[in-house]
Image (tube, rainbow, N blue to C red; front, side):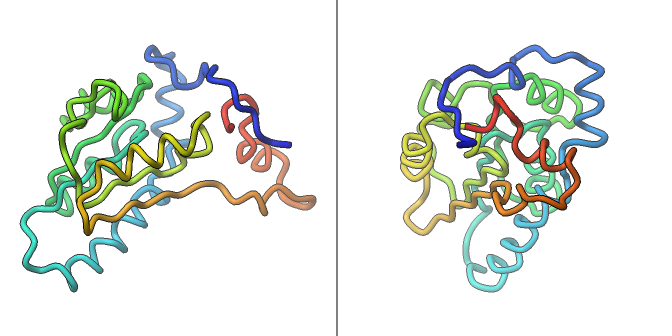
Length: 176
């Protein structure tokens, strides 16, 4: 099994090695994969929900905050991120965006709010209790809100694919 259901995690500590943070920002963040679903959704929203005021957007596990920055600065949404790891602090300071360290449902300033869009890109595979995570997210959606989840494809774990990429998709010790 590739599932490991402990709560332990070292990768998302609140303090981050600056050299590793630089690597993540330059290479590992997957900016295109973060932004593509948002760009697609914005097209749908622009066509079907023209009468809506500014979209309330929340990104869970936003990392450095590239998606939060894109949603706020490029799409004009009211964008907030939640990132317990040190990436969030670095991104909040560098990009001047709204990122909280406290988890949703556990003291976050976003706890009393409801959102049109909640996005969690490559997050759910890191969660030891996905049912609780999904319930918490659903409780913070507006009635007509949209929850977007992305996760690595298990089909990629196969002979013939580059071993370093297979290892990255497995992310032993971090993917639950």
